[in-house]
Length: 165
Image 1 (cartoon, rainbow, N blue to C red):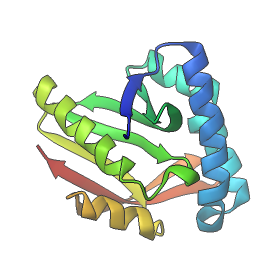
Image 2 (cartoon, rainbow, N blue to C red):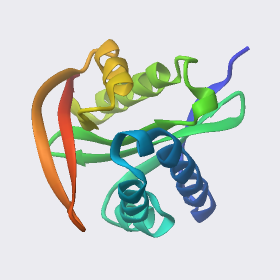
Image 3 (cartoon, rainbow, N blue to C red):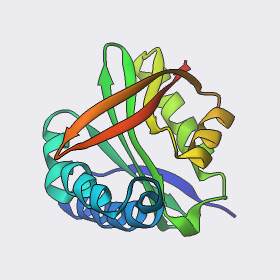
């Protein structure tokens, strides 16, 4: 029997586990898309323990995804203008293909309904084709593009996707 749950990352230990998993996921998944140097920069700037703690202090919420009591991924969100910005939804490589993204997205839709939020939106790298396919399968629509300068000569070249609640 599958045991799926999403748990708030309420301790430094939980945030540390997320940062450790982020480093693994980013290096294996994003290096072929954006290169090792940009991955190192982005992990340090957005996914490291200090970066996550700073985001939490600024109002972001983080959750750990567990499947059969195994830490399998994480979610980072922020409420903005009656909408939910899905900053991060990442699954460990060995946990992919088990419909955990669908279950995590169902969790987010229910959270939005509980909080009276009207939309979920996110950014996704234009060349992250498999992930874009997953988001489209979950019912998100690509609404526009965005190129964001993130410093050190790097940019995020993304699609913006939305889901109406």
